[in-house]
Length: 130
Image 1: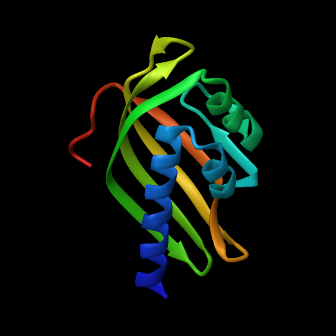
Image 2 (image 1 turned 30 degrees about the horizontal axis):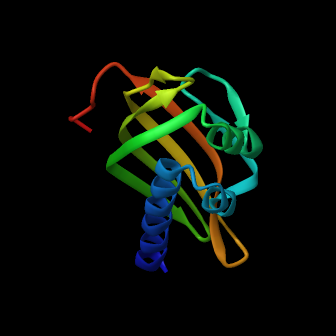
């Protein structure tokens, strides 16, 4: 199950990245758990609806996401992903480019994987050592 699980999560991470870049509400709705708690880099706690509303309203516009140095911790039907990301985009019309450290918890819900918890930290510069 280990390698198969890793492949499923890597595919889910790629699908999430694409959905975020396109602000694809239907895809995000499928990939994010209804119980999602996302603590963003400002320390704000967001729900799934909060996250979807940012995309739906156009306040958040992500042009590109470059994920690197992914580490996965798998256990049965749960996976924790730690990753670094370089992101370009805008928030409320202002430049929001930056380098981030992310942690996401994926859990299997029926036949699909969903993010149930996520956290991001803004880095001062791209972390190329990790």
